[in-house]
Amino acid sequence: MKRVYVNEKWCLGCHLCEYYCAFADSDDKDMARALKDVQINPRIKIEKHDDISFAVSCRHCHEPLCVKACITGSLTITDGVITINGDKCVNCYTCILSCPYGAVSPSPDGVVQKCELCVKATGGTPICVKGCPNGAIVYEDRG
Image (tube, rainbow, N blue to C red; front, side, top):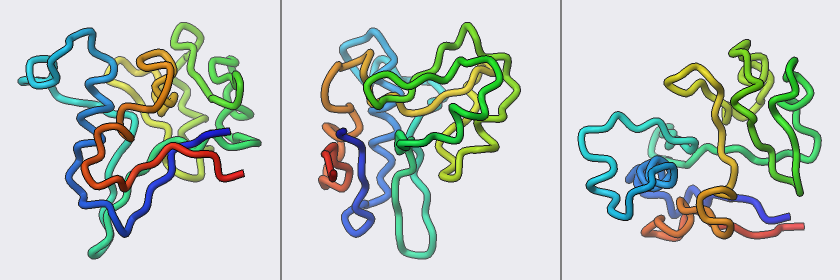
């Protein structure tokens, strides 16, 4: 199954992936207009340690601890993609505590959020991959 991978050697730490991720949830065609004066809350986050920058997002694990920890069944796996049903989420955050990668976070309305590979937004290649100016984020199957 294809997943998002990051090559930290190529990551500039520019945060464009975060903006593209936030833009993926908008209905607007213009990113500048959609995100102007908006506090973004992306599902991918840039981390920086010393001189190394890298993007952190859901790895869509084969045996996801977040799905096992979810007490309401709001996290499910469909065709290898872990998705969230916000109507079922009760904001207990056990999925956040159980994710070893720190890829699950609360959204502004309290429901958890994580990368869903832009399945709803693009149906294809995640928008963070398309928007990465240096090609540091890729969407590929590594077996």
